Length: 466
Ligand code: GLU
Image (cartoon, rainbow, N blue to C red; front, side):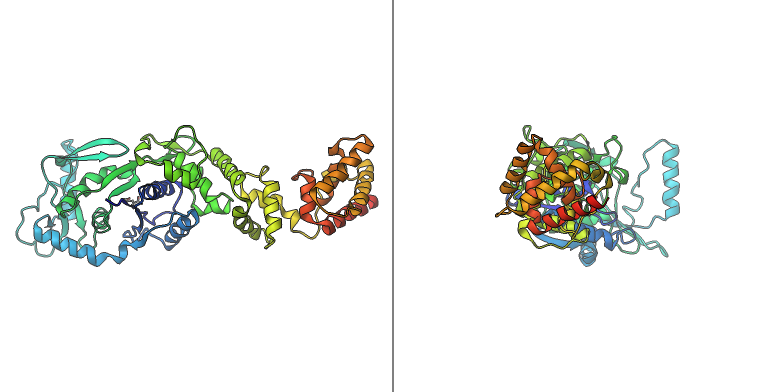
Protein backbone atom coordinates (compact mmCIF):
# COMPACT_ATOMS: atom_id res chain seq x y z
CA UNK A 1 0.00 0.00 0.00
CA UNK A 2 1.35 3.43 -0.91
CA UNK A 3 1.05 5.93 1.89
CA UNK A 4 -0.76 9.12 0.86
CA UNK A 5 -0.85 12.04 3.27
CA UNK A 6 -2.11 15.56 2.88
CA UNK A 7 -1.80 19.00 4.37
CA UNK A 8 -5.15 20.71 4.26
CA UNK A 9 -4.92 24.25 5.61
CA UNK A 10 -7.85 26.63 5.71
CA UNK A 11 -6.67 29.99 4.37
CA UNK A 12 -8.55 31.91 7.04
CA UNK A 13 -5.42 33.00 8.89
CA UNK A 14 -1.79 33.29 7.89
CA UNK A 15 0.07 29.96 8.01
CA UNK A 16 2.11 29.92 11.21
CA UNK A 17 4.39 27.48 13.01
CA UNK A 18 1.49 25.38 14.29
CA UNK A 19 0.28 24.65 10.77
CA UNK A 20 3.81 24.21 9.54
CA UNK A 21 4.45 21.49 12.05
CA UNK A 22 1.36 19.60 10.93
CA UNK A 23 2.48 20.01 7.33
CA UNK A 24 5.96 18.82 8.24
CA UNK A 25 4.72 15.68 9.97
CA UNK A 26 2.51 14.82 6.98
CA UNK A 27 5.33 15.49 4.53
CA UNK A 28 7.90 13.59 6.58
CA UNK A 29 5.70 10.59 6.98
CA UNK A 30 5.03 10.42 3.25
CA UNK A 31 8.75 10.77 2.49
CA UNK A 32 9.71 8.25 5.12
CA UNK A 33 7.26 5.69 3.74
CA UNK A 34 8.09 6.39 0.11
CA UNK A 35 4.55 7.71 -0.31
CA UNK A 36 2.88 10.79 -1.73
CA UNK A 37 2.09 14.12 -0.14
CA UNK A 38 -0.83 16.26 -1.27
CA UNK A 39 -1.53 19.93 -0.66
CA UNK A 40 -5.18 20.87 -0.44
CA UNK A 41 -6.42 24.35 0.30
CA UNK A 42 -9.68 24.20 2.26
CA UNK A 43 -11.14 27.48 1.12
CA UNK A 44 -14.85 26.70 1.35
CA UNK A 45 -15.36 29.41 3.94
CA UNK A 46 -15.38 32.14 1.35
CA UNK A 47 -15.98 34.92 3.83
CA UNK A 48 -13.02 34.20 6.01
CA UNK A 49 -10.59 32.93 3.36
CA UNK A 50 -8.20 35.47 1.90
CA UNK A 51 -5.88 35.48 -1.08
CA UNK A 52 -3.10 36.69 1.15
CA UNK A 53 -3.47 33.59 3.32
CA UNK A 54 -3.36 31.36 0.22
CA UNK A 55 -0.21 33.15 -0.92
CA UNK A 56 1.48 32.60 2.45
CA UNK A 57 0.62 28.89 2.28
CA UNK A 58 2.07 28.48 -1.22
CA UNK A 59 5.15 30.64 -0.67
CA UNK A 60 5.71 29.28 2.82
CA UNK A 61 5.60 25.66 1.68
CA UNK A 62 7.95 26.49 -1.19
CA UNK A 63 10.38 28.31 1.09
CA UNK A 64 10.33 25.38 3.52
CA UNK A 65 10.88 22.91 0.70
CA UNK A 66 7.81 20.91 1.73
CA UNK A 67 7.13 19.99 -1.84
CA UNK A 68 3.80 18.41 -2.70
CA UNK A 69 3.51 15.53 -5.13
CA UNK A 70 -0.01 16.63 -5.99
CA UNK A 71 -1.95 19.83 -5.72
CA UNK A 72 -2.54 22.44 -4.68
CA UNK A 73 -6.17 21.47 -4.90
CA UNK A 74 -8.79 24.03 -3.97
CA UNK A 75 -12.08 22.96 -2.47
CA UNK A 76 -13.87 25.87 -4.12
CA UNK A 77 -13.01 24.26 -7.46
CA UNK A 78 -14.67 21.00 -6.48
CA UNK A 79 -18.22 22.13 -5.74
CA UNK A 80 -19.65 20.13 -8.65
CA UNK A 81 -18.15 17.00 -7.22
CA UNK A 82 -19.55 17.70 -3.73
CA UNK A 83 -22.99 18.34 -5.24
CA UNK A 84 -22.86 14.97 -7.01
CA UNK A 85 -21.93 13.13 -3.84
CA UNK A 86 -24.71 14.85 -1.92
CA UNK A 87 -27.09 13.67 -4.62
CA UNK A 88 -25.79 10.12 -4.28
CA UNK A 89 -26.17 10.17 -0.53
CA UNK A 90 -29.74 11.43 -0.79
CA UNK A 91 -30.51 8.73 -3.33
CA UNK A 92 -29.03 5.97 -1.19
CA UNK A 93 -30.77 7.18 1.95
CA UNK A 94 -27.54 8.07 3.73
CA UNK A 95 -28.70 11.66 3.74
CA UNK A 96 -32.06 13.39 3.96
CA UNK A 97 -33.63 16.82 3.59
CA UNK A 98 -34.28 18.62 6.80
CA UNK A 99 -36.94 21.34 6.82
CA UNK A 100 -36.63 22.43 10.42
CA UNK A 101 -36.49 26.19 10.66
CA UNK A 102 -33.98 28.12 12.67
CA UNK A 103 -36.71 29.07 15.14
CA UNK A 104 -37.68 25.46 15.67
CA UNK A 105 -34.10 24.41 16.16
CA UNK A 106 -33.49 27.25 18.61
CA UNK A 107 -36.57 26.24 20.58
CA UNK A 108 -35.42 22.61 20.64
CA UNK A 109 -32.05 23.70 21.87
CA UNK A 110 -33.51 25.75 24.70
CA UNK A 111 -35.70 22.90 25.86
CA UNK A 112 -32.73 20.54 25.88
CA UNK A 113 -30.64 22.97 27.85
CA UNK A 114 -33.50 23.47 30.30
CA UNK A 115 -33.63 19.69 30.75
CA UNK A 116 -29.86 19.70 31.24
CA UNK A 117 -29.41 17.60 28.11
CA UNK A 118 -26.65 18.04 25.60
CA UNK A 119 -28.09 20.15 22.75
CA UNK A 120 -28.36 18.06 19.61
CA UNK A 121 -30.54 17.59 16.58
CA UNK A 122 -32.99 14.81 17.35
CA UNK A 123 -33.66 13.67 13.80
CA UNK A 124 -37.13 15.20 13.44
CA UNK A 125 -36.95 15.12 9.63
CA UNK A 126 -35.33 11.71 9.31
CA UNK A 127 -38.49 9.97 8.28
CA UNK A 128 -40.27 12.85 6.61
CA UNK A 129 -41.49 11.91 3.18
CA UNK A 130 -43.09 15.14 2.04
CA UNK A 131 -41.34 18.47 1.49
CA UNK A 132 -42.49 21.41 3.57
CA UNK A 133 -43.79 24.16 1.31
CA UNK A 134 -41.89 27.42 1.40
CA UNK A 135 -38.85 26.03 3.24
CA UNK A 136 -35.51 25.50 1.49
CA UNK A 137 -34.18 22.38 3.20
CA UNK A 138 -30.67 21.62 4.34
CA UNK A 139 -29.23 18.15 3.77
CA UNK A 140 -28.24 16.09 6.78
CA UNK A 141 -26.17 12.96 7.02
CA UNK A 142 -28.06 10.05 8.52
CA UNK A 143 -25.62 9.11 11.27
CA UNK A 144 -25.97 5.63 12.73
CA UNK A 145 -27.94 5.82 15.99
CA UNK A 146 -26.35 2.87 17.70
CA UNK A 147 -22.95 1.41 18.29
CA UNK A 148 -19.62 3.10 18.56
CA UNK A 149 -16.99 4.63 16.35
CA UNK A 150 -13.50 3.64 17.33
CA UNK A 151 -10.59 5.81 16.27
CA UNK A 152 -7.28 3.97 16.45
CA UNK A 153 -5.31 7.15 16.60
CA UNK A 154 -1.57 6.85 16.09
CA UNK A 155 -0.92 9.58 18.64
CA UNK A 156 -3.84 9.38 21.06
CA UNK A 157 -4.35 5.63 21.02
CA UNK A 158 -7.85 4.16 20.95
CA UNK A 159 -10.57 6.77 21.26
CA UNK A 160 -14.17 5.55 21.33
CA UNK A 161 -17.23 7.65 20.50
CA UNK A 162 -20.86 6.62 20.98
CA UNK A 163 -22.99 7.12 17.89
CA UNK A 164 -25.81 8.20 20.17
CA UNK A 165 -23.71 11.26 20.99
CA UNK A 166 -23.33 12.26 17.36
CA UNK A 167 -26.26 13.99 15.75
CA UNK A 168 -27.06 14.23 12.05
CA UNK A 169 -24.58 16.63 10.59
CA UNK A 170 -25.63 19.20 8.01
CA UNK A 171 -23.70 18.38 4.83
CA UNK A 172 -25.32 20.96 2.57
CA UNK A 173 -26.74 24.32 3.57
CA UNK A 174 -30.12 25.50 2.31
CA UNK A 175 -28.37 27.31 -0.54
CA UNK A 176 -26.86 24.00 -1.60
CA UNK A 177 -23.27 24.75 -0.57
CA UNK A 178 -21.46 21.85 1.08
CA UNK A 179 -20.19 22.13 4.63
CA UNK A 180 -16.64 21.77 5.83
CA UNK A 181 -16.68 18.28 7.36
CA UNK A 182 -18.37 16.88 4.30
CA UNK A 183 -15.85 18.35 1.86
CA UNK A 184 -13.01 16.88 3.89
CA UNK A 185 -14.63 13.45 3.65
CA UNK A 186 -15.16 13.59 -0.10
CA UNK A 187 -11.62 14.85 -0.65
CA UNK A 188 -9.95 12.33 1.62
CA UNK A 189 -11.82 9.59 -0.22
CA UNK A 190 -11.24 10.92 -3.76
CA UNK A 191 -7.59 11.67 -3.12
CA UNK A 192 -6.95 8.22 -1.70
CA UNK A 193 -5.60 9.55 1.59
CA UNK A 194 -4.29 6.69 3.72
CA UNK A 195 -3.05 8.74 6.70
CA UNK A 196 -4.68 11.89 8.03
CA UNK A 197 -2.21 13.79 10.17
CA UNK A 198 -3.74 16.94 11.62
CA UNK A 199 -4.18 19.06 14.71
CA UNK A 200 -5.95 17.39 17.63
CA UNK A 201 -8.56 20.14 17.59
CA UNK A 202 -10.07 17.96 14.83
CA UNK A 203 -10.29 14.77 16.86
CA UNK A 204 -13.98 15.36 17.59
CA UNK A 205 -14.77 15.65 13.87
CA UNK A 206 -13.22 12.27 13.20
CA UNK A 207 -16.06 9.89 14.17
CA UNK A 208 -18.52 11.78 11.97
CA UNK A 209 -16.06 11.81 9.11
CA UNK A 210 -15.47 8.07 9.53
CA UNK A 211 -19.22 7.38 9.49
CA UNK A 212 -19.61 9.41 6.31
CA UNK A 213 -16.68 7.68 4.66
CA UNK A 214 -18.19 4.30 5.47
CA UNK A 215 -21.54 5.43 4.10
CA UNK A 216 -19.71 6.24 0.88
CA UNK A 217 -18.27 2.76 0.80
CA UNK A 218 -14.74 3.85 1.72
CA UNK A 219 -12.43 2.51 4.39
CA UNK A 220 -11.47 5.39 6.66
CA UNK A 221 -7.80 6.35 6.64
CA UNK A 222 -5.53 5.99 9.63
CA UNK A 223 -5.64 9.09 11.82
CA UNK A 224 -2.93 10.80 13.80
CA UNK A 225 -4.01 13.87 15.74
CA UNK A 226 -1.00 15.87 16.77
CA UNK A 227 -1.04 18.20 19.77
CA UNK A 228 -1.16 21.95 19.64
CA UNK A 229 1.81 24.20 20.10
CA UNK A 230 1.56 26.45 23.13
CA UNK A 231 3.23 29.75 23.84
CA UNK A 232 6.21 29.75 26.21
CA UNK A 233 3.75 30.78 28.95
CA UNK A 234 1.59 27.71 28.39
CA UNK A 235 -1.29 29.62 26.76
CA UNK A 236 -2.51 28.85 23.25
CA UNK A 237 0.08 30.05 20.75
CA UNK A 238 -0.86 33.49 19.53
CA UNK A 239 0.64 36.37 17.60
CA UNK A 240 2.14 37.65 20.78
CA UNK A 241 4.28 34.49 20.96
CA UNK A 242 5.49 34.66 17.42
CA UNK A 243 2.59 32.85 15.77
CA UNK A 244 3.19 35.08 12.82
CA UNK A 245 3.15 34.24 9.16
CA UNK A 246 5.79 31.62 8.44
CA UNK A 247 7.26 33.98 5.87
CA UNK A 248 8.29 36.25 8.68
CA UNK A 249 10.87 33.66 9.71
CA UNK A 250 12.33 33.94 6.26
CA UNK A 251 12.52 37.71 6.67
CA UNK A 252 14.10 37.36 10.09
CA UNK A 253 16.91 35.29 8.62
CA UNK A 254 16.02 31.78 9.72
CA UNK A 255 16.95 28.79 7.60
CA UNK A 256 14.05 26.61 6.55
CA UNK A 257 15.92 23.52 7.71
CA UNK A 258 16.43 25.03 11.15
CA UNK A 259 12.76 25.91 11.51
CA UNK A 260 11.76 22.40 10.42
CA UNK A 261 14.31 20.88 12.77
CA UNK A 262 12.93 22.96 15.60
CA UNK A 263 9.34 22.00 14.83
CA UNK A 264 10.02 18.30 14.37
CA UNK A 265 11.54 18.16 17.83
CA UNK A 266 8.50 19.78 19.44
CA UNK A 267 6.72 16.70 20.66
CA UNK A 268 8.91 14.15 18.91
CA UNK A 269 12.36 12.87 19.79
CA UNK A 270 14.96 10.45 18.61
CA UNK A 271 17.33 9.58 21.41
CA UNK A 272 18.91 12.82 22.55
CA UNK A 273 19.74 14.10 19.08
CA UNK A 274 18.86 17.77 18.71
CA UNK A 275 20.22 18.74 15.33
CA UNK A 276 18.81 16.97 12.31
CA UNK A 277 19.34 17.48 8.64
CA UNK A 278 16.35 17.00 6.41
CA UNK A 279 17.59 13.54 5.41
CA UNK A 280 18.14 12.56 9.03
CA UNK A 281 14.62 13.67 9.89
CA UNK A 282 13.17 11.60 7.08
CA UNK A 283 15.17 8.58 8.13
CA UNK A 284 14.28 8.81 11.82
CA UNK A 285 10.72 10.12 11.84
CA UNK A 286 7.73 8.03 12.71
CA UNK A 287 4.37 9.54 13.50
CA UNK A 288 3.84 6.87 16.16
CA UNK A 289 6.61 8.45 18.20
CA UNK A 290 4.89 11.84 18.45
CA UNK A 291 3.73 12.50 21.99
CA UNK A 292 0.22 13.60 22.83
CA UNK A 293 1.04 16.39 25.23
CA UNK A 294 1.11 19.93 23.87
CA UNK A 295 4.54 21.50 23.67
CA UNK A 296 5.59 25.06 24.29
CA UNK A 297 7.23 27.17 21.62
CA UNK A 298 10.71 28.27 22.66
CA UNK A 299 12.14 31.08 20.49
CA UNK A 300 15.56 30.83 22.16
CA UNK A 301 15.95 27.24 21.17
CA UNK A 302 14.91 28.03 17.62
CA UNK A 303 17.62 30.69 17.49
CA UNK A 304 20.18 28.25 18.84
CA UNK A 305 19.24 25.65 16.24
CA UNK A 306 19.38 28.22 13.52
CA UNK A 307 22.96 28.99 14.37
CA UNK A 308 23.75 25.28 14.58
CA UNK A 309 22.47 24.86 11.05
CA UNK A 310 24.40 27.90 9.88
CA UNK A 311 27.57 26.47 11.40
CA UNK A 312 27.12 23.07 9.80
CA UNK A 313 25.99 24.14 6.35
CA UNK A 314 28.21 24.29 3.31
CA UNK A 315 29.00 28.01 2.99
CA UNK A 316 27.90 27.95 -0.64
CA UNK A 317 24.49 26.67 0.42
CA UNK A 318 23.99 29.72 2.62
CA UNK A 319 24.95 32.24 -0.04
CA UNK A 320 21.44 32.66 -1.52
CA UNK A 321 20.03 33.34 1.95
CA UNK A 322 22.72 35.86 2.81
CA UNK A 323 22.26 37.55 -0.54
CA UNK A 324 18.53 37.88 0.08
CA UNK A 325 19.20 39.50 3.45
CA UNK A 326 21.79 41.85 2.00
CA UNK A 327 19.37 42.87 -0.72
CA UNK A 328 16.94 43.92 1.97
CA UNK A 329 19.65 46.25 3.27
CA UNK A 330 20.20 47.64 -0.20
CA UNK A 331 23.34 45.68 -1.13
CA UNK A 332 23.34 43.56 -4.24
CA UNK A 333 26.36 41.33 -4.47
CA UNK A 334 27.21 38.42 -6.72
CA UNK A 335 30.73 38.04 -5.41
CA UNK A 336 30.64 34.38 -4.48
CA UNK A 337 34.11 34.38 -2.92
CA UNK A 338 33.30 37.37 -0.74
CA UNK A 339 29.89 36.02 0.27
CA UNK A 340 31.27 32.63 1.23
CA UNK A 341 34.13 34.29 3.07
CA UNK A 342 31.70 36.41 5.04
CA UNK A 343 29.68 33.34 5.97
CA UNK A 344 32.74 31.46 7.20
CA UNK A 345 34.08 34.39 9.20
CA UNK A 346 30.78 35.68 10.59
CA UNK A 347 28.72 32.65 11.45
CA UNK A 348 30.13 32.15 14.89
CA UNK A 349 28.86 35.58 15.76
CA UNK A 350 25.42 35.62 14.21
CA UNK A 351 22.36 33.59 15.11
CA UNK A 352 20.45 34.51 11.99
CA UNK A 353 21.33 35.47 8.44
CA UNK A 354 19.68 38.80 9.01
CA UNK A 355 22.05 39.48 11.88
CA UNK A 356 24.96 38.31 9.73
CA UNK A 357 23.97 40.68 6.94
CA UNK A 358 23.63 43.56 9.36
CA UNK A 359 27.05 42.85 10.84
CA UNK A 360 28.53 42.70 7.36
CA UNK A 361 27.42 46.03 5.93
CA UNK A 362 30.97 47.36 6.06
CA UNK A 363 32.02 44.88 3.38
CA UNK A 364 29.71 46.54 0.90
CA UNK A 365 29.90 50.23 1.66
CA UNK A 366 32.43 52.51 0.00
CA UNK A 367 33.53 54.01 3.30
CA UNK A 368 32.65 53.29 6.91
CA UNK A 369 31.03 55.44 9.52
CA UNK A 370 33.15 54.99 12.56
CA UNK A 371 31.47 54.59 15.90
CA UNK A 372 32.60 57.70 17.84
CA UNK A 373 33.16 55.79 21.08
CA UNK A 374 35.36 53.22 19.38
CA UNK A 375 37.22 56.03 17.59
CA UNK A 376 37.86 57.91 20.83
CA UNK A 377 39.25 54.78 22.40
CA UNK A 378 41.27 53.24 19.59
CA UNK A 379 41.92 55.94 16.99
CA UNK A 380 43.64 58.54 19.09
CA UNK A 381 47.07 58.97 20.61
CA UNK A 382 48.95 55.66 20.78
CA UNK A 383 46.28 53.90 18.72
CA UNK A 384 46.93 56.23 15.79
CA UNK A 385 50.65 55.67 16.04
CA UNK A 386 50.11 51.91 15.92
CA UNK A 387 47.76 52.28 12.99
CA UNK A 388 50.34 54.23 10.99
CA UNK A 389 52.90 51.48 11.53
CA UNK A 390 50.46 48.74 10.59
CA UNK A 391 49.48 50.65 7.48
CA UNK A 392 53.05 50.95 6.33
CA UNK A 393 53.84 47.26 6.80
CA UNK A 394 50.59 46.09 5.22
CA UNK A 395 51.16 48.28 2.20
CA UNK A 396 54.49 46.55 1.66
CA UNK A 397 52.99 43.03 1.61
CA UNK A 398 53.54 41.22 -1.67
CA UNK A 399 50.55 38.95 -1.12
CA UNK A 400 47.30 40.12 0.43
CA UNK A 401 46.31 37.01 2.36
CA UNK A 402 44.96 36.48 5.83
CA UNK A 403 48.12 34.57 6.74
CA UNK A 404 50.44 37.37 5.61
CA UNK A 405 48.27 39.99 7.32
CA UNK A 406 48.30 38.01 10.50
CA UNK A 407 52.09 37.81 10.26
CA UNK A 408 52.38 41.59 10.03
CA UNK A 409 50.20 42.20 13.06
CA UNK A 410 51.95 39.52 15.04
CA UNK A 411 55.45 40.78 14.26
CA UNK A 412 54.55 44.29 15.19
CA UNK A 413 52.98 43.18 18.44
CA UNK A 414 56.08 41.19 19.30
CA UNK A 415 58.41 44.06 18.36
CA UNK A 416 56.43 46.42 20.59
CA UNK A 417 56.03 43.94 23.38
CA UNK A 418 52.26 44.49 23.11
CA UNK A 419 49.36 42.05 22.83
CA UNK A 420 48.00 41.23 19.40
CA UNK A 421 44.69 42.79 20.39
CA UNK A 422 46.28 46.12 21.07
CA UNK A 423 47.68 46.24 17.53
CA UNK A 424 44.59 44.79 15.90
CA UNK A 425 41.98 46.97 17.57
CA UNK A 426 42.76 50.30 15.83
CA UNK A 427 42.80 48.43 12.51
CA UNK A 428 39.47 46.83 13.26
CA UNK A 429 37.83 50.12 14.14
CA UNK A 430 39.29 51.80 11.07
CA UNK A 431 38.07 49.21 8.58
CA UNK A 432 34.82 47.97 10.13
CA UNK A 433 33.74 51.07 12.03
CA UNK A 434 33.29 49.16 15.30
CA UNK A 435 35.35 47.35 17.88
CA UNK A 436 33.66 43.99 17.16
CA UNK A 437 34.22 42.04 13.98
CA UNK A 438 35.34 38.67 12.70
CA UNK A 439 39.08 37.95 12.91
CA UNK A 440 40.79 40.99 11.50
CA UNK A 441 43.16 39.12 9.16
CA UNK A 442 40.29 37.34 7.40
CA UNK A 443 38.32 40.57 7.32
CA UNK A 444 41.13 42.48 5.63
CA UNK A 445 41.70 39.74 3.12
CA UNK A 446 38.03 39.71 2.17
CA UNK A 447 37.84 43.46 1.99
CA UNK A 448 40.85 43.56 -0.35
CA UNK A 449 44.04 45.53 -0.30
CA UNK A 450 42.78 48.70 -1.88
CA UNK A 451 39.74 49.25 0.24
CA UNK A 452 41.53 48.19 3.43
CA UNK A 453 44.39 50.62 2.91
CA UNK A 454 42.00 53.40 1.91
CA UNK A 455 40.10 52.95 5.15
CA UNK A 456 43.30 52.96 7.20
CA UNK A 457 44.31 56.18 5.44
CA UNK A 458 40.94 57.77 6.07
CA UNK A 459 41.17 56.89 9.76
CA UNK A 460 44.69 58.25 9.96
CA UNK A 461 43.60 61.51 8.31
CA UNK A 462 40.57 62.07 10.44
CA UNK A 463 42.50 60.99 13.54
CA UNK A 464 45.27 63.49 12.99
CA UNK A 465 42.76 66.19 12.08
CA UNK A 466 40.74 65.57 15.25
N1 GLU B 1 -8.61 22.74 7.23
C1 GLU B 1 -8.37 22.29 8.55
C2 GLU B 1 -7.55 23.31 9.30
O1 GLU B 1 -6.92 24.14 8.70
C3 GLU B 1 -7.65 20.97 8.60
C4 GLU B 1 -8.59 19.87 8.31
C5 GLU B 1 -7.95 18.52 8.23
O2 GLU B 1 -6.73 18.41 8.22
O3 GLU B 1 -8.73 17.58 8.15
O4 GLU B 1 -7.55 23.28 10.51
